[in-house]
Image (cartoon, rainbow, N blue to C red; front, side):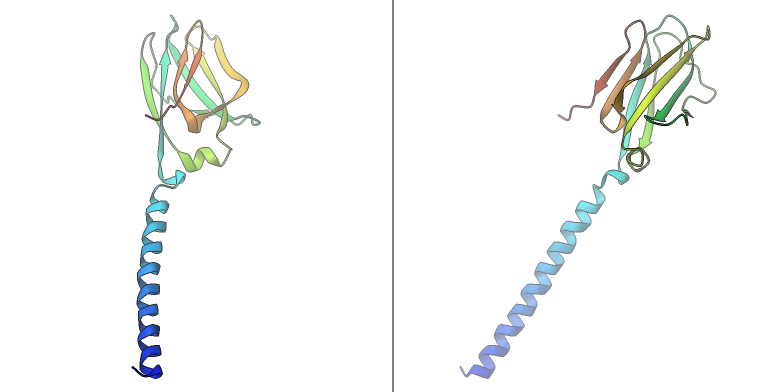
Length: 139
């Protein structure tokens, strides 16, 4: 085999290898892109274990007074729960750290703000005599 022919075959094999590798890398990034946090939904259950009905539920970024109402017209009676969905992209914009406020039928309220609550990692929030936060734990 002469040098010119051998080098042409080597270059051709290299181009095929680069094409295959490029396709594999592109596929890997496409798969990674589909699992980006902003494409996923956070589902958080809010449970009212308080004897009073929960009339309003709010969240706000930790260092903001800009509260977002979550229940709309709904009322959570004692023992009821609601699953709400949040887009991770929206949560990430505020660093995932939020405070949570519940207002009850008698006008009293519970505000969970003494520490930042990572809504990106929560599974359930329970309101009642002893409010609790259940973090998400993957299986």
